[in-house]
Image 1 (tube, helix red, strand yellow):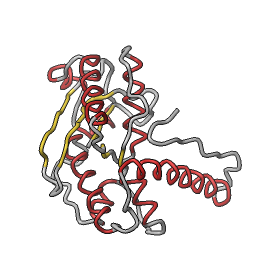
Image 2 (tube, helix red, strand yellow):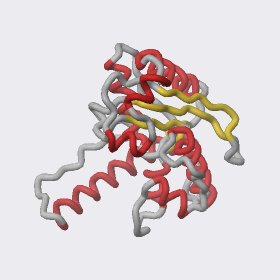
Image 3 (tube, one colour):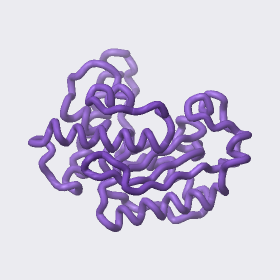
Length: 222
């Protein structure tokens, strides 16, 4: 599993504050994990700190050098991908795009065509298209009966919860998702494109935003 907490929502400017890369077994129990607290070398907005709990002052004391930390995160993910281990990331385009931009910012070779990735958000929308309500990690975890614990928005807990949500979806929709991780990765590329196009159509037809077009790509934004 992979998750980031950052300084903001814009993937082009957000800086990594905390990160988690881990592995869970078939029972959803963590078997290995790596966690990072990073000094992003910029001020952390109060709104972001309110979400993940890391203020500018705190990361100055506890955080590691940004370039070192980002290089370690990239390396940890690269090892998993080279071993063929599927990496779960809820709303993957955010986390993988931020990591890509951070790597380039510090002159670190970014991940190239990372796969296989499992994005429970994309899969949930594909297999249960018409379910009403928000699709945040918290709401989706609740729907599938996955306990987030008391530390939602901590990178580690969110990553583990996303992994368990992915497992719950795989059980509920075993027939629909009976494919290899590589095949599922390819499916998500198509599903995400369809979801983006559907949203664009909604914006144009229901909200009158006639110039809105789908521009997102999965699992990274380009």
